[in-house]
Length: 186
Image 1 (cartoon, helix red, strand yellow):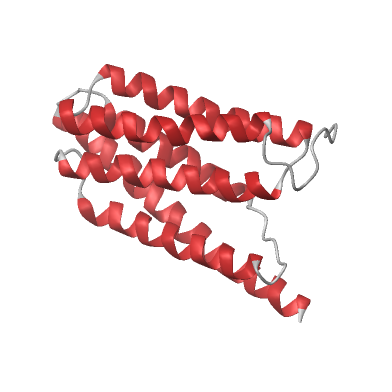
Image 2 (cartoon, one colour):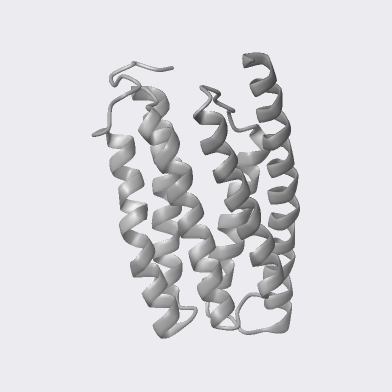
């Protein structure tokens, strides 16, 4: 239920403040991972930023979603997730192939969102896109833990591949839904 406290053009909102926390936390987390590799401190920071991601969605729905939030929130998520995944690849914690697939999808969908947005079309996220985000967050969170057993690393790899499947499927859904919306708007 939305109280509509903020209009669609508002920039300084509580939800956007939570998004900015993720933006600020991104270089901090990247430095932590690159300097120290997987650590419990990195897991704690990751859990904190994941909570801000959930919280900003709740706050935005209650106080009014904005165009700036609709742009900044997914961008902050993509930079954070793909950035930390890339750092984990550099540290040998994740394999580069699934990370590249996820990064390519995120780049394509972001560009497409911008393109359809300039045409006045908004394509809302489907429920599976939210599941994709959770699975990506879990894969990164577990990869940040300093646990070295082969069973644990296989578990993380399985989560990452599940995230890839969801990422590709939801990306295709987004492109199909966007195309339909653009054709309706013509």
